[in-house]
Image 1 (tube, helix red, strand yellow):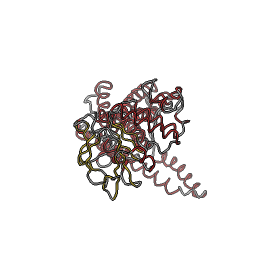
Image 2: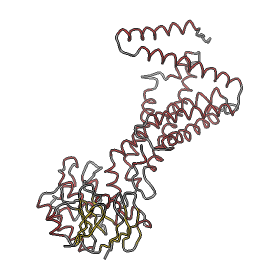
Image 3: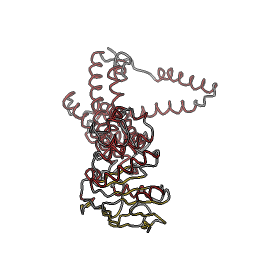
Length: 263
Length: 198
């Protein structure tokens, strides 16, 4: 099957739609026109830039470059997790907690997928490594930020309950147990829902892109299944890791609840 | 016989404080916001503090905090509940203190959300005593109770303290109650905890 290459003219035909939308919001005085245009320009510039980076990266298979881009992606994802917290941990923990748990699960699972499942040679072949890691980070980011947000806001609200349980001689793990369970659940539900709805309610974006660019549908489906499994496992593991470390951090060595560690 | 000893215990803006409480009821009074609750919370090792608390010469910082809090029975001014049913908070279906507080035997089946403040307070006392603490730290235990329940709680605490030789630290604003029960009284005034001579 031939790929129908999109010309700049084709894309400008799509851009007209966005401009039309911006124009209509202007008439309706929705005060959105400039934001729509700026966001659209950002999409073009950012995607073109990453396209160029990927092109350069694919041209020479170099572990160092792949690692550098991976770390950059991780750091941006970590910042995003932190920004989405209503009550985050103070100091380095605010940034480090989400980043660390995403690093542990996303990197391990991506490397596992590259070596054991896809078996590329070398294992860090950028065509596979970067998109896989990107999918992992994008989704674990959501899971970790949901889980951590639930953990910290609920602990904040339920201070009296947690302390009542400590007073009655429960250890910290039991005292905050209901809250950690809820947090992990909240972090994982989006992925479980996505797996359940995949193919019926929605055609996943990656698969759509592959099919549009000419891949045989069943091949695209197999990759999509791989991605869904990886993402689900990655999101779940990182939500568990982040919640566990976060919950531990809410208590000190004398098992006192230390909410002042949240800012 | 249990002895609670505080050595240079210091929290909040209060000055360091030393005391030895034997089998007696010691009242702690003072204006709201003076730090009475924080003081009890420090003894239960729930908040950061300086100095040391000893129970029969066992140092708080040497004891596992979970064990320490079981020994030191702290009753906060407001009770907190995590389960839906009252019974979710009791390990034993035959809590001996429930009938003594004029609560019906089936109260363990109640929904926590439907209990009144006074019922919750009496249930919280039964819940605490069931752990058999060696010491009682009571933060305004009768503030939300009707006069009959106040009498029940007072005599229950006295009986418990006598039976287990437990020291009791009791925060109260009720002058008549202090008069009725008090063996020693300390007052927080200008950040200092001073014994009131009667």
